[in-house]
Length: 153
Image (cartoon, rainbow, N blue to C red; front, side):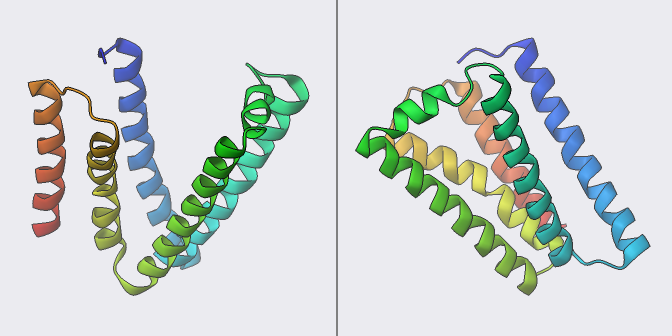
């Protein structure tokens, strides 16, 4: 894969949004007295509603390819099983996150959740190996070490 300006801009935007989410969460906690658990549940529910709205708009107005390719792929029994497994796995992930958040601090939960990305990359490399450059390996190592160091501070 080759780094692009658009990719860099999207990564920067993602990091800014992640920080803004933290600031907004603190403001909501101060104003309404909500905790991390309640905020996580509300954000998950709001995200589900927004995703459903996006899917509906794309289906009705054909933004991009619409749902045609997804529906065509779902006709294959193998693809349909994978789609259902993916949906069930994501739902289980959200539920487990919610349970864990109820038992640990928001900072600990965030740190544990940030290790999900390196674990996902590792699993992908096991199932579909690709040759990684030195810079790829260095980036993965820096991300993992930075997360662990942050957890010690």
